[in-house]
Every structure is written in structure tokens, then in C-alpha cells.
Length: 343
Image 1 (cartoon, rainbow, N blue to C red):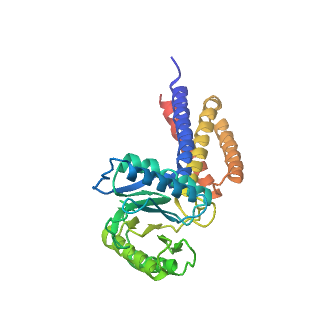
Image 2 (cartoon, rainbow, N blue to C red; image 1 turned 120 degrees about the vertical axis):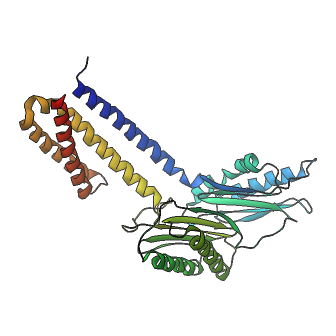
Image 3 (cartoon, rainbow, N blue to C red; image 1 turned 45 degrees about the vertical axis):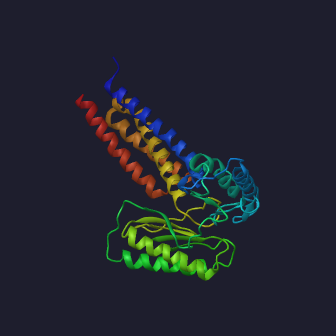
């Protein structure tokens, strides 16, 4: 029968191996974030399409849009002749690269077929792009028509949250109007808030500002003091995030500009990996610590300190994180040793 102390260490090593490999899988998921499905909208009416004319026009339209996605972030196209014509477009986020436009848009045709079938109008919204189409006589809706929202479950506290949020929203409204490019895309930060806004590429700048303003008003009313939110209207969308400790600086999906989510997860994975390594080192040190008692234990702390100091020089974890990890490992060894002597 194995030693309880040895079994305990092996258990921690096994669990931490899962954490490390789990972190690797999370990193893989991050790379594909911009192709995740956010929502779908499918018209109830279906093609009356016995000869298959509409279906063929839709396939041709999607093929045209996908081929154009390797060149620009916002095209419009049509396929077929009246009364069987279908019009459509796609829009990509302004912080994606040209190759990411294609990666995102090329996912949509299959999703439309699976999720909406022969709907006469549909929209598929992914994290990094969307596409929509409709038959020519389909009823048009205003640019500010509400489509979808997501409000974070966490709530903010503090009297200044609302005033800072409103200031950040106003900054984004002005930002999309002054973009000057085809994307009508803006990201920025105001104190603890990070905000993003984008409109369809053919909107006038004044109309874009009005659309984004309407989306932020919806966020205020429906999300309230939620620390994050996203609102999608017919021709624009917005998002915001609140960071009580300040907005972190993070590279965007395209490697330029600033965004938040991917680097936060990368840092979390790195911290988890270094923490796991620290636990493994502690477990490897433990048998020697028991044999040499407290003298070897202090030597082990020195070894741990040197190891973590080296890690702090070659990883993205700063010295403060390493020092916290060292102190945690110190307490962990003491607790495990007391527990082992009790056994």
C-alpha cells in the first residue's frame, strides 16, 4: 500500500496536468472566437421554390459574398432576376484582418442552410462578422430595429459607475462618426470602461452615430448596472465592458489595436501553468523535505525562489505574480507537512 503523502502528491500532479492541458485547449478555442455563433434570425416565410430557382440564386449569392470576403470587409451583392432576385451582404468587425474576413464569412453559408433552411430572409451573426439576405419584395426594417442583446450577469457597485458609463458611451458615439473609413468602426476606453461600436459600411456617418446612440440607450435601459453588454440593431452593434481595476492592454484578433478577452485568457492560462509547475515542484521536493525535516525544507524554499525568479524573467507573469505564487507555495508546504506528520 502506497504512502498517503506520496499518493497525495501524485493526485495533485495528476490534477494539475489536467489544468495545464485544459489551458492548452482553451488557447485553441480563443483563436477561433470570432467564428462563434451569437444569434440567428430566420423569416417564417419559406421559398415557394418547386423549380429550385430561389435556392440556386441563394447559393450563387453566398458564393459571391464568400469570394469577395478575401478582399474587403463590407460588400453587397444580388443574384437572379426579378421577381426571383435575392439581395445580401456581409459585414466584418473592423479589427479583423483580410484573411480573417474570409475565415469568418466562409462559415456562414452552411449555417444558413442548417439553421434557416429555405427562409426568404435570414441573418447569421457570428462574433466577428454577420451576413444577411432577403428576397427583393421582403419588407425593409429601419437601421435601428432591435435584434438581440446580451447583458453580463455581474453587477457593478459604486456611485460613479453610471456617469462614467454614460461618458464612455458618448465617446463611442462620437468616435464612429469621426472614423472616416469604410468600416465605421470604433474602439476606445474611458477610465474603467472599454467600448466598441460599428455600423454597416454604407451608412452615412450621421446615421451611424444615431444608430450607435440608440444601441447604447438600449444597453442603459436593459443592462443597467451590468459590467458588460452587447446590443445588436439592424445596421449597427455596440459592446462595452467595465473593469474595476482598469482596462488591460490586449492585442486584437488581428494583432493590431486593443481589445480585451483574448489576452485576459492568455494571462490566466499562463498564471495557471506557472502555478501548476510550482505545485509539481513542491510535490517533488516533499519526500526530501520529510527526510531532512526543516533544514531541507528551507533549502527547498530557496530552490523554489530561484526557479520562480527565473520563470518571472522568461514568462509574461510579472514579479508581483511570482512573489504571490512563492508565498502561496510556502504556506502550501507548511500545511501539507503538518498534515503528513498528523498521518
